[in-house]
Image 1 (spheres, rainbow, N blue to C red):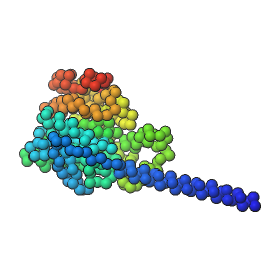
Image 2 (image 1 turned 30 degrees about the vertical axis):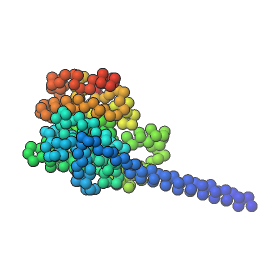
Image 3 (image 1 turned 180 degrees about the vertical axis):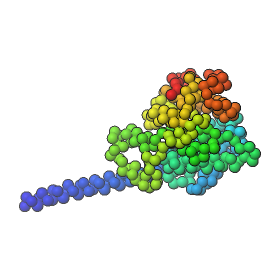
Image 4 (image 1 turned 90 degrees about the horizontal axis):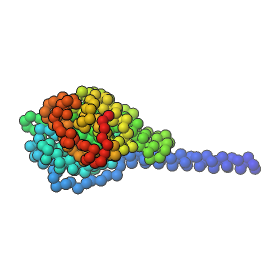
Length: 329
C-alpha cells in the first residue's frame, strides 16, 4: 500500500515536470518566433518624401526617398539609411527633410520583418545588410551619368547591417553607424539580461529556436570583422553613452577595427560618444554632413588636421546643442 502511494507520488512529480518542460518549450518557441517576426508599425509617409520600390529577393521593398533621388536627379552624395530592430522608416523622416537642404539625397528602405517589408522575418543584421546592398544598387540605377558617392547610415541593428553591407559591397564610399553592435550574440545576451537577470541562460532555447527558424547563427554575425575589412576608409562610429543595450565597448571595438583616427577634440572623427544620449543621436545632422563634406565631397583624407582646418567647431555637434558632455573614444 505504501509502495503504491510512493509510485503515485513519483508519477505526479514526473507528470508535473513533463508538463513544465512542454510549457517551457512552447513558450521558448513562441518567443523565438515572435523575435523573428515582431509587431509591425507602418508609418504614414511625410509630404517631403517619395515612395519608391527597391527590388529585393523577397519582393519589392517600399522605401522613402528624397524628391531629387526619386526623380532620377540625385545629388552627388546619397545616404542609404537602415533603421533598427523595432523601428521603421519614420526613424529617418527628419533626416529625409533636412539632408536635401544641405545638398544631399537619401533613401530609407524597410528592414526585413518590419514596417512594410515583403520579408516575413528579421535577419539579425544579415538579411538587413542584403537589403542595404540592394538599395545601393537601386540608387546607382537612378543615375545615368557620374554615379554618386554613397554613405551607409544605420542605427542599432541597422548600424550593424551597414557594416556587414560594406563587406558585401566595398565600393560604397562611407559608413556611419550609431548604437551598432560589434558582436550580435553578445548584444543579444545583454538584451535578455536587461529584461530579466540571468535570462540569457534560462531562455537560451529562445535563441536556438530563432536560429533554427532563421538559419542564422547569432555567433556568426560579426560586424566587427566587416569593420576590419573597411579599415582605413571613411567611417564614423557614434555611441550614446546612456545606451545600456548596445554598450560602449561595441563602439570601441568597431572604431578600432575600422582604424578610426583619434581626432583630438573634433566631433567629426570616427568614434564620438555622447553622454546623456540613449539614441537618436542623428537628430542633429550638422556634424555628419560636415564629416561627409570633408571626407567624401572634398576628397580629403580623414585626419585631425583636415577636419579641424575645414570647419569651425560650432558646425559639429557641440555640448551646448543638447546639454551633453561630448568626448571621443
